[in-house]
Image 1 (cartoon, rainbow, N blue to C red):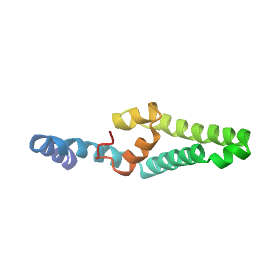
Image 2: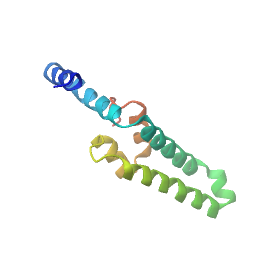
Image 3: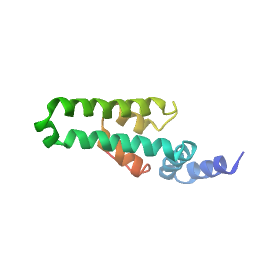
Image 4: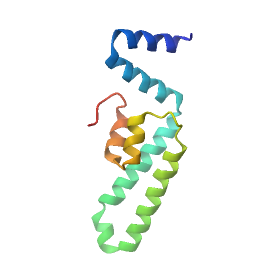
Length: 113
């Protein structure tokens, strides 16, 4: 048994709340930072486009195109995540709860209700 698995077992036995946090940290470590950075950037870009009411008012077609492009980037990156990605993050992405997904990426051990 390697050290990380031993640490996880100790945490699970001693403090179940910490075990969930430790599992998320292991998942984060197993994925490259680039994957999460790209996902976060794509999510933030989509949220920015949605919030840009001035862009929508002056160029609805351009706004729609930008929204479609931003959404496609999120979908592409989300589809490339490993099957064992944290189920909470997967849930947020599937339900398009993008503010919660960004919050999860910033603080993976926190509850985002």
